[in-house]
Length: 213
Image (cartoon, rainbow, N blue to C red; front, side, top):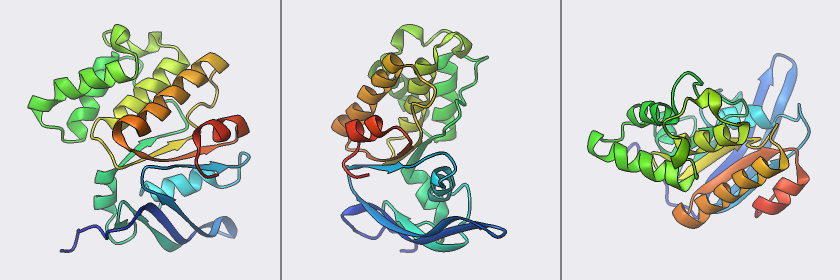
């Protein structure tokens, strides 16, 4: 079967992955693996190539060389299959401020192809899980930064991805909001067994959340 995943204990295997921008080598023959259900942290300063790596692993940017296997699917050969297995929380806040939290999640549910009969239950569960049920009907522009980040994590989890990629998920948040996001990330692993790969330049965050850095 062309799109059958390869059975493996690792949810992520990065194999000599490389990305060049002209003469600049942003990611240079990187190799690592992440066990299923683990949280893997990439720690480094701004400009180290973390976001470039995440963009390759989420199929947003083609690698110059090498490949990766995500949930058993080859990144280069079967990018569509990889997309069905992953969730992605980008570094920049991206929820639509003119829409309510509910409307943002409804759009995501439709884009992910969640059946109509299942959407309301999934959305309600997501709001409850992220402790946002009380603001689901409010416009997102009225949310705090931490609430927006939790909403975006809810969006990324609606389709129950095997692997969740998070690019500096708490950047710009105050300590209280940061810890609220940390708790939700820990809950994702406990509740769904989600494999998480996250980038950060916060050593405390990496120490709190990651099995391997």
